[in-house]
Amino acid sequence: MTELTFKVANGKGFPLPNAFMKTLYLSSLNGEPFKTKLLNIGEGCITLVPPSETFQAVMVIPVQGFGSVYVYADNKGTGFAGSEKEIDLCFEAAKTRLAKVHRWIREQERTGFSPSDIVEDKLNAAEKRLKGAERAGEGSRERSAITFKSLRDSLWAGETVAVEKAQHDIVAGGWKDGFLFGCNCFGHPMLGRRYDELFLEVFNYATVPFYWSVFEPHRGDKGWDRNDELALWLTKSGVTAKDHPLVWFHSFGIPEWTRGLDYETLKSLQRDRVYEIVEKYRGTIDIFDVINEAHDWANELGYTHDQLLEMTKLACDATAEANAEAIRVVNNCCIWGEYSATDATHFGRSDRPLTTPYRYLEKCIKANIGFEVLGLQLYYPVQDMFEISLQLDRFARLGKPIHITELGISSANRTDPNAFVRQVNPFH
Image 1: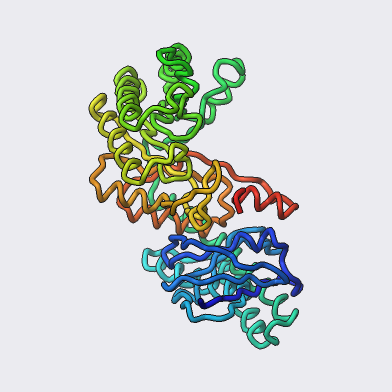
Image 2: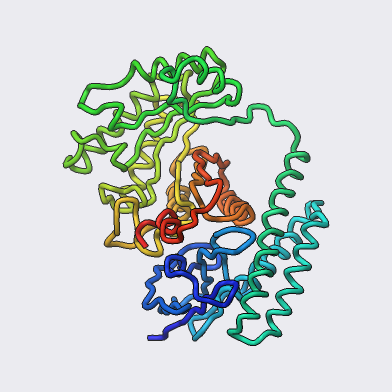
């Protein structure tokens, strides 16, 4: 059994806290995580057994002057082989980030985009410092200090150029009629008139809650009145309404009275629920999260991957039958799929390999399941805007429009690394 050791030190040459070291995982070059078991962590070293395929390393690293984010080490785009014995992770991450940003800029320049002098200055500084780190003694504190300054500069270069490219595309694309910007409207009417006024000043799109465990806590006792009132208020206000979610195998989406039912019975109930809701609100609510997080993260009922696909098709088909004009969103969270590297789900460890959102969506498309939109959630991704942009481009290659369906970003990182990492993945 070949073992690989990653050397990981901070900008002063000292070992990183173990909480950060535990976030390390390996993935393919296209971002699909490999099952990663860390054999040993201690004194700035992480030992594991690498996969047989070419891989990259991914880890949360606190970079002074930028923040704590996932960084990538992929041997400047070519990946590492299982024959590697030792890798200086931070040094390789600095090399990778610089090469990745340069490569991305060259691709964008073919579309007429040019980065600002600020980006060029950051990249030049990062490159100069990286050369200095290469000259410094391997494993020395000097190399660590220079490496982290180079990484900081290339992180900022990527973040800045991603924003610049977005601004460039917005100007080039011009005004888009029908652009929807929204939020849940769960505060109406309980929070009063001022809430309503502020909501309508900002949003033209609103989510109406259909969490099954809340909507129908007892069989047949359905919360139509509450949602009718919300839908009527939104319609009168000229706000486009969206349902969330029709099917979700999380405790919020599984009423207690359904637990213990066999798969076929629950499938029939789910179909009836989807059809009834979609048909009732046809013309008032025409956009639906038809299924939510059906890529193992929230699979509390332990359905197989084939069953999850079958439930996805059922939800999509029943929605179309009830409303041929409906826009069907297949909604996904944890879009980097890092949970699959450690077989973690929101409710604990899984005893079987997990699928990622990207692989799940690939299977849906291959199975010819009919839906219109990929829904992607961005909760505390611990990724900078450059990596977020790359990930959105990756999902766009599946050939469907993308909706950012849910979003939550901290204004600052936690200072306690253990608390911070529990937020990243509570099951490390």
